[in-house]
Amino acid sequence: MLEHGGRLRAAAQRHGVALTDWLDLSTGIAPYGWAIPEIPANAWSRLPEADDGLEAAAQHYYGARSLLPLAGSQAAIQALPRLRGPARVGVVSPCYAEHAEAWRREGHQLVELCEASVPKTLDRLDVLVVVNPNNPSGRLIGTEQLLHWHARLADHGGWLVVDEAFMDCMPQHSLAAHSHLPGLVVLRSFGKFFGLAGARLGFALAHGGLLRVLEEQLGPWPVGGPTRWLGSVLLADAEGQRRQRQRLSEDGARLAALLTEQELPPTGGCALFQTVCDAKAAQLHDHLARAGILTRLFMPLGLRFGLPGEESGWARLEQALRHYREQNA
Image 1: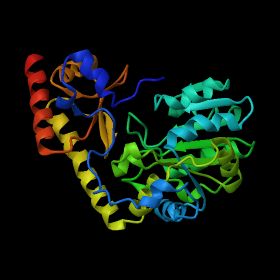
Image 2: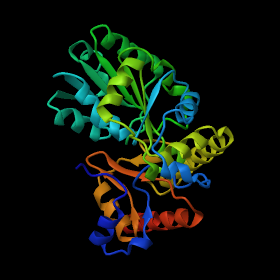
Image 3: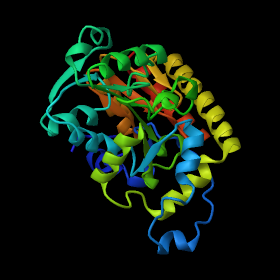
């Protein structure tokens, strides 16, 4: 198992801070969301059915012709490498580490690339994996560039897999509208933007033939009935999405400004997180952890900060950062 953010129990044991006393900024998940409506009893008592409105709501929200609901986009990350024979796979790195690990685990030849080296490597790749915007750098690759890469891969039967887990606040940059093209797979996460990671819902957007093969690989009922019902409701709530997008964008800018004020200017980020590259990132991570603030350490890149959800969290983070700056002045 690779290490991920959100492991509060392990952090509580390691640093001797009670579980209830943590401010968790380690995950890049929205710290606020929707009031959960009452879930109908039959969503719990009946097996999930595919004609319940979830696919239609998701297609409209993402602007995609065809998609497959998943138990989080992680399900597709692990399953896609099983759908190809031995392949040479490029991953634009550093990025979410599960991508490289999933292809490596299935025996594919893995090549970790920087963005600049992709064009000269494409003709020798069967699959290229891109996280856009990148996690943890926040780097956004333009739509035209990605479509050009896709066309070159598709010419020899290759795939472009684009993980858009953090794309909801800037949907104009999404490849969802192009996901019906053969050889293009777009992955979307529900839990991050909607603040409901525990629901375990995501989507694979691709042409129908590939989705049918992926569906067979995952088996029946990959998403539970209550999650399907909740996803249908929230994906259709355009006004709630507008409010969430505005608040997250404002708070992402607020976090970047706070870090800059404390002499830790972010090197990149998006609405849901900001990343600081600093030679003393591990020291800062430990300092914050001793204060009960959990961040995500990416070595050697630096430290990723998620958003505080309440004013008390913002004040607590500012105080801890100021204390760190004074100690290291």
